[in-house]
Image (tube, rainbow, N blue to C red; front, side, top):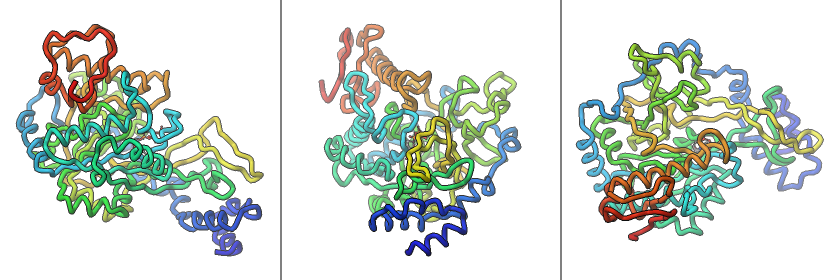
Length: 466
Ligand code: UTP
């Protein structure tokens, strides 16, 4: 594409500033920038920015929201937990379960300059998030006598480093063809005030991953889709890279999903405080959906039922089970999910070629959310778990008040202590015993391996068959 053709194209959308540095670019840089520009849907971006495509007015919709029926801890449900666990274990043993990990995010809040999965989180072992999560998959496979494949979504921001890191560590024990990595798409960042696209360098648009909701589209472009079919996987256990406490391929959760013939099931934790920054599972006019904390009006977050409980109590942990056929059909109609707008700090190169590092949000980023598949599903299910057992995400930088690495390390330590004490071991208060997934995946496996009365008085890492 020539300079004149590009200029004409950009004039239509008021974006000619993208060619400001054309004169100083090499031939390769010009062709790279021109390719990026031509792949942008400028008309769609303009509509997104002005809110023309905004689907829901939450001030109107949220007051109608109520909590969906849910499998709640200690409350009756059509199937008991033992029946659910048996159904989940049967599916696992039959090799019907695959794992899906989304790890394309930029982890800006954590402020770590690598893919978040490479962050060291083991309180004693210093293991990375990837190590803990992948070892959980390996260990779950051993437990049920199968190989559980992992479908790992990266983004251009995380792909190369993630692949190199996992290969360097022999995929933490996963067989080569049990790891399928595929890359999600991107969206340009747009200046909040002017709607102009930002340049990351003189020859490069500022692009960011298109959200975890980019999963169906990324699947549709990748061999992962046919591998899911060829391996006859019927249930996909979806989790995120930031939660090392996840109960990997949780058989009880899988079983509830299977027995309810659900297409999308979601693990939730009970919100304690209306201000908690977590999306809530809700139902509006009989339709299941998740309302992001930033969309939920304060009055609705604080709304209570007659018994004094929060009306919208079900906090999203972002752990799901998808019916594989459902997810693949979503992949076939991949363009469908709506975009959400986030205000973020995005460094950029200005018209004079200077790099600007903003201190306040300056740009709109556009992301799709995986949970927007909920309203599309015919049947959904919500299952409550205890946060101490299953949910401790690393979101924020060290020292933050919530979801910091310190909180997550403490949660891993507390879980180890709880499992050991349940097995009759003595663990001094404050003593951290970290349990490798290869040693035990839950309290039952700890009980099989630990002699009652064993004492732990200093920080310990229990690994393999110690
Ligand atoms: P978050 O919403 O916490 O975003 O992602 P993030 O990018 O990791 O962190 P911040 O907001 O920049 O601080 C939740 C999960 O979704 C994945 C992340 O990797 C994480 O596992 N994700 C997020 C993607 O795979 N792609 C995306 O485009 C965004």
